Image (tube, rainbow, N blue to C red; front, side, top):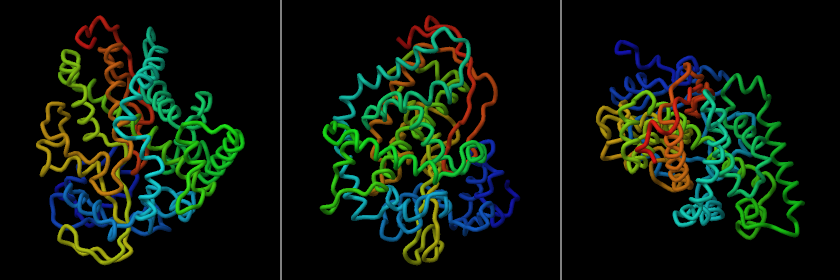
Length: 417
């Protein structure tokens, strides 16, 4: 990597991502001044992108919403993800102020720390109900059997959707957010078709609840008004998809990666078994090392200098959280998984400040804390059972399959009780 010509590195090359994020390339790019440009040749009909890989640069762009727009080009690495850009812009995460702020207020009250804390008992029951299905089993797929149903039911309980719909909601999340992965595209087809199914689902719920709306997020969206007008069906559907993705992809991705790290670093797991009060720190280190989303995209509204380099107006810029969270200017020995770090509050897994900072941070932390705690109680000697399979995606930092052997029962980890 040290001899590789920096200008020839194309971070959009999917071949670089088969085994996970190319951390060595990010280190190589970060070692030289300036902002890196990738041709993005994997998508010949799309243009290239600039990459921000230093924590300070990502923070600067995150806070300057006038210059780095979420709305102009959306948040992805390409314009065409199977859903038209005009529809993508109806999603809160792909909006700029002031409409972004008004949309965020529609659901903000449901995600306050107090409201989320009140959801702790319900979240623990969901986690325990899922994990208890596998007690006595020798082996499971951590990414499929355990990591899918838990967040699906947690976010489903907040949305007010029935548990019987969870598999359908997980399927929609997989297809729409994992649009880059060729296996998923071959298996499930075009993203746009799935989006139409979501619109139809929302309309069916609207009719079903016409006379009896509940106290849940989906009911709130069905009755919400912005600037004195009700949300259109596509607006509700895109908001719904955002909540599904934030609730499903985020926690399941970090949970699987963190559990794998604890297996691969038994001394770290031993610390948690001996002292469960360290689990919140393990959650934060998991978020730092394995943020669920590799980046968020922006587009420049004017020519701007960042990192000592000029980026032209209208350019696509990717804010790489998987790189900024491993910036040696912030974290010593940044590729080491270490739950004893003292500055874990500086990671950017939920964003780097500004108005697009993740709405669901309290829920994600609560869910991950309970999930890791209850997993360690049941299977303190869990082991990997094969290499697993990564999602082929720049956007999703996620394991698609992760077989594990559950190991001996909880008597091994008395300290986790």
